[in-house]
Image (cartoon, rainbow over all chains, first blue to last red; front, side, top):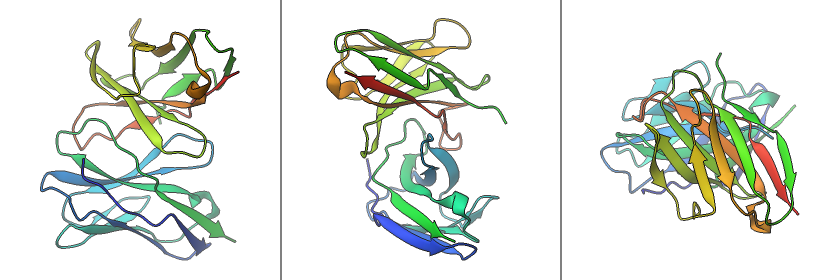
Length: 110
Length: 115
């Protein structure tokens, strides 16, 4: 399974944008980039996914580099409720299980 | 919005005892998963299940573990003879399909404590 690399932790201020980076230099052509997050004491929660083009949904935006070797999850206005561990995961087009790494622990300061 | 529900939220058991962790996946979902997370560590894949069969399992999922879908709504994980190292959060997940486009929906977990 192709690996992803994320910073262990990041800090943000409330109501400011947050850019969470992910490197995946060994990504294959059929891997989709998925982001999940895990709020304290909860199970992981789907955030967004994409293949090549940038993607937007009600939770976040996903910016994917042209060579697909990196991506950035963008939270446009961080709230205290966005404090969580964010996981960047490569998932083959056939789908199946998710393999979680350590993720980035995002803290949000009021 | 439909949710994956897990019971109990916390289970305490003695070493060597059998435990059954229960999950009710989202009703139109066809693929089911169990994951575990030892305190302070990564979320680890245990097993995936489709069409009443295990479709994939990890090295962690040894003979002490089994899964079952005993009726149309429940999905269970049984640990036959618990060990101290089985203490962890256990998450159930489901998805409508297996494809990349079908996200996994996770429950909020059962905290298993083995004493």
